[in-house]
Length: 141
Image 1 (tube, rainbow, N blue to C red):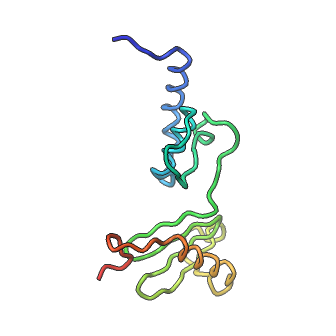
Image 2: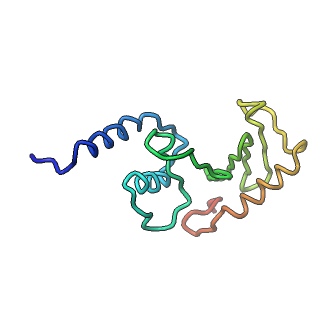
Image 3: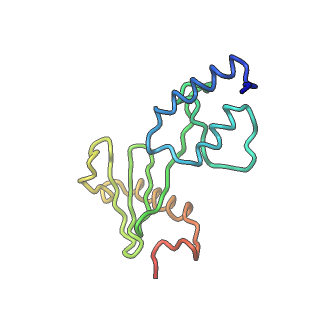
């Protein structure tokens, strides 16, 4: 079977595939789109909030881009990771739990009371990032 790739393209693809083992669970699917677009030197076909991971994988130019925060939902809770801060909000009670992962990586000491500015900013993020949906309610009724 004939190959339509040049030797440099094969080498580039091989290095890229080999470096995929460096991925961690934190790199979600939306980042793949930007990563492959940069790797193929093509524009993104649709808008995306993902960032290219090529710098981390060793194939990109420059330094790794970062998000101001990461937001997700699970089991009736909202969660945000922002720098060294991680917070959870229970959808039924509305209570916010804030943790400083640098000082407490095990998330054993809740610190929202001593960090009201950070707690307020993360509450704002949770309100902004949430998209209400009948298909994906935060709390199932």
